[in-house]
Length: 262
Image (cartoon, rainbow, N blue to C red; front, side, top):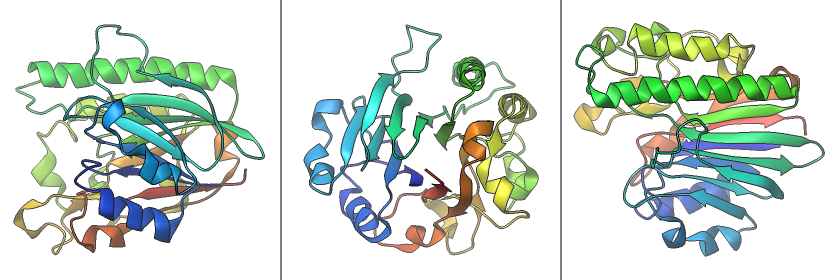
């Protein structure tokens, strides 16, 4: 089963690019972020006619996550547990049933900027959200079943994951506190799929629209797959489909893939 995570930066603005990618690359499952659409406004028919089951968790104009799956989806839940007052649409879960069931968690982690020495509400929201992520991750580990958490984490894990790490030192994506919160989740026993397969730098999943970042390969790697041990045992491969960034009207992110033996 080939699963991709893709921050599409607006489903309506990117529907042509998204359907071209689906038709050419044929993921079995696509976890989408930043759909920027309410559920009833999501163009689900376009994807259903391509054979996908569609589940969304959207909001107007911002955020929003979705799952497209050629396999049945069961036990769909929306929203990251731990804060009933959180109205931002950043988390969706479902069990995909192929030869084996796998719990999928699609996420769009808060950006967190501006930081203002860690005191700005946006950064505090990011860190509180990561605390809730840790709690959900701990529960997934306790289930001892194949599960993954994938999406736009808005975290640059290591210096090698940025073309110019010094430019990101004070950014919410690369601050020590942000990276420590990410490592805390990993240290529960998760496998970061890309780094399980590929070493070294010069591997990115995001290039800003500004200042010719794509042409200069001035990128960062912020889109990740975290696998439970039972899911990591099924991992065949993980890769970044970077060429998608060079297409017409692209997202500023590109798809990241895992291939699982299910």
